[in-house]
Length: 476
Image 1 (cartoon, helix red, strand yellow):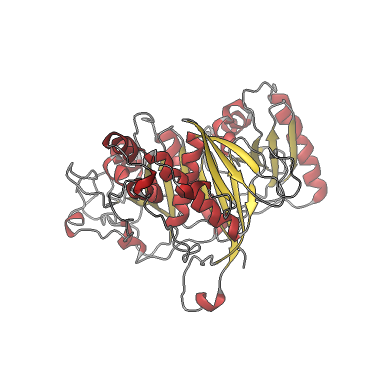
Image 2 (spheres, helix red, strand yellow):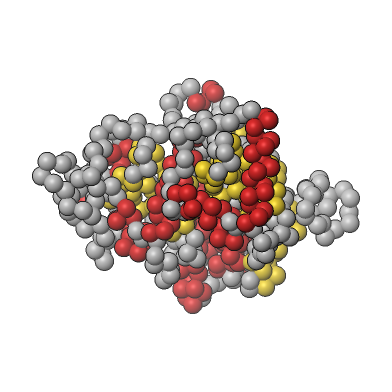
């Protein structure tokens, strides 16, 4: 079975494809299969249409170069591991304080990237990144290393920079440590200065006093440690005849089945986003991304959450999560209901990210009955194009294609729409889709109409003002 793992940030996405080693998988009954044989790796960077692709050697070299250069950038101490073009496929070069050159030595350059060398044998690919793109790439690598079910034998091996490459001043240390993001980048910041050994990751253990009463405060005291706390206590007061909500997300997940069907996860992912996105009012003032693990019931109710990083533990009051937990006074208590897990990130730039905690085991499909008659779908295709074209002036401020999945009923009336890329989320108000949807449901975030068969299409709004409507071929 082909397995995909996706690690997404606003400016970078790592997509890994591979297989499970059946000789190893036979000894484990994991609900999420282990990707132990890497077949293909793709690195998508914002501003470039084509991904960087390669196999295991390319991916391992990319990880080593990213980690080594992050160590160098944070410490201002040269690290030869980031520039080893003799034995590595990937290297970095610093252009200035905000520009960094990623160089890939390969047999051929993929289309869309211009090679700076005219040598036809091994033309290198050279891509200039700004610092934001660089740290998104570092964070994507962090997400990979935090995923124990993907290439578990591949570990981050960082060596302290020797004294002969220069010592770091205390001022540099104070400058570098706050900039460290995630698991591996925190490690490189520490190792760069020979301060602490690489951290050993251990699963957080809930403390007994964190599971005492259902009215306990969600926000830890100022002296709390970085251990994430499990929190799922509803804000509303429960009645005497209603069981309190499960407070400990970890305990809940150990007692109920897990939703792993990719199509159901895709639908629930949208419901979570549609609940949290409009409720997140205070989007400024975050010093670090706040990352949480969510438990979501089959009807979309948020039944629990747990902080993943220290900042999330301390900043839960800056998120709408405490107010979005289900109220057991209005809904049956969670007992043996299956629960889906999601990773939700409140980013410092105000962008909300929601994705399945374990990724998608396979490509999801659209849930619900579909209109498949070719003659009917052809007519609906043209009708949808005419409706959208008449409602859209073609005036744009975006620079990349906005891609959506749009569903219509047998009469051509819009029943559902879904952004398919980040720019489609960012610029959806420049399209007529929310107005069309709002005219029917009275809300832009209403649940989609799944009570009747629907025809699905991909609609693309281009920066040039052109519009494309084609039959839906599935998620990419």
